[in-house]
Amino acid sequence: MNVILFGASGMIGQGVLRECLLDPDIEAVLSVGRTPLVQKHTKLKELIVPDQTNLSVYKRELAGYHACFYSVGASAAGLKEDAYRKINYDLPLVAATLLSKLSPQMTFIYVSGRGTDSSEKGRVMWARVKGATENALLRLPFKAAYMFRIGAVLPMHGIKSKTSLYNFFYALGAPLMFLLRKFSPQNVQTTEEVGRAMVLVAKRGACKPILESSDIHELLFG
Image 1 (cartoon, helix red, strand yellow):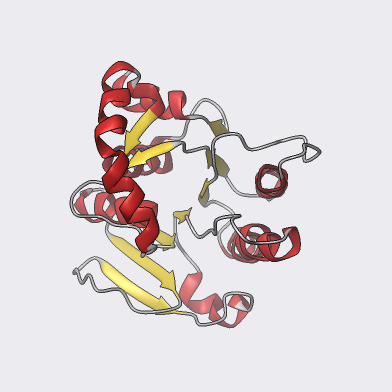
Image 2 (cartoon, helix red, strand yellow):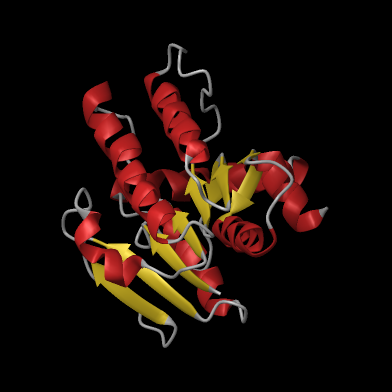
């Protein structure tokens, strides 16, 4: 299996990349991003795309893959809806629409968030936009598409967020998150577990297209 990964430098993306590189069934990983990664690996190839609104010029490089993991996104903090939508709706749809034409037999996996609003009509802006994104992705003619509604995630194996403030809060809240994980493991995943679950779904599929944290836990631990 050959896979594409958008957002490999983010916290979730780093976890997915790690599991892709460890998995013997994955032969090649194409990382698509605006800047080069620090990590190097024999399986890993990079496609540097400064402007991801114009992916069509890279048709040749993006064709022929079996799965795509999309984990690019931005926090809603400080953003108005138009700006948030450009990052969290427009960009994934540009990528997914092109890939569905190039490789309709592809499995597309999108990193969404807990609390996403499928009705697109709720009061919470980010949830409406994420809901619109999920709905639009599920309408595309892929072999399969899955939405991972991730909640609380613990970074493992030295993985860090690109945002320093987030790293501060992760360090501060780690003891509480580990305690919550002990008593409610289905509500707190590690970056390793999220990555493993996404790779597993890319290979085998899942029983439904929208996967909540509890579903992700069930995939891994039954």
